[in-house]
Length: 337
Image (cartoon, rainbow, N blue to C red; front, side):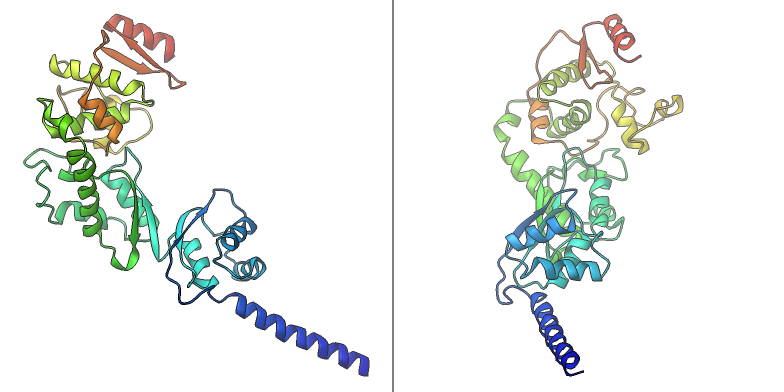
C-alpha cells in the first residue's frame, strides 16, 4: 500500500509538472516582441510539418505541445496552407486560430493576373476579411474620382464598372484592423497608377492609342495567351484585325459578360446582345475583362508584326497561327477534333 501511494504521489507530481509545462508551452515565445515573421505553410503539409515550421521560425515553444493542442481541439485537419504573417507575441491558441481561418493579425492577399473585380471580392470573402459582395459593391459606390485615368461615360459591365482591369495584380500585405473595402480598392488603383501609368510613361507617349484601349486589349491578350512568346504575336493579330475593322472574335469577352468561365458556349450565348460579344460586334469591348499583367500591357503597347490573321490553341495548349481563313479552318480540323 505504501508503495502504491508513493507511485501515485510520483504520478501526481509528474501530472502537475506536465500540466504546468503544457500551459507554459502554449504561451507566446516573447510577449513584448512585435516583429513580423513571414511563414509559408506548403500545400499538403501534415500537422507535424506545420509544427516543425513554426518551431524553426521560433514562434512556438514546443512542437509536441502544439500537436497536443490542435488535436485536442479537433482542428488539426483544419489548418490551412499559404503565406502568413505571425509574431512572437502570439500564443499557440492565436497562431492555431490564424492558421485555421487562413488569416493572421496581418495578412497577405494575392491578386493573380487575369482576376476580375468579382474574383477579388470572392478571395477577400473566402479569407473572412469581408462579407461576400462588399468589395464588389464598393467598386460601384466608393468615390474613386481622384484617379483621373479611369474611364467614364462608357457602357461598362455593371459588375466591374470603371475599375475593371485597373486593379493591379500583385501581392498585398494588409492589417486587418485597418482594412476597409474602399481603402483596399484605392490601394489597388494607386498601385496601377505607379506600376503602369508612371512605370510605362515613355511607352504610352509613343503610341497613338488611348490608355483605355491599351488596357482593354491587354486584358484580351491576358485571356487569349499562355506563354510569353505568344503575347506580342497575338497582340499583333488582334490589333491588325481591329485596325482593319474586322471582328476580333474573342470568346473570352462573351464568357466575361455572361459570367460563364467554363463550359461550351451555346448559339444563344454567342448571340447575346452585348457590346462585349465580339462575335457579334466589331472593335474592342467597352472595357477590360480582367486585370492584365504588366507583360500583357507591354505586349499591347508593342505588338509584333506578322503575316498572321488567325490563331487557335489545340487541346494540348499549343498555339497555331494562320494567314487565311481557309488555313485557320484547316487548323481547326487538324487540332480541335
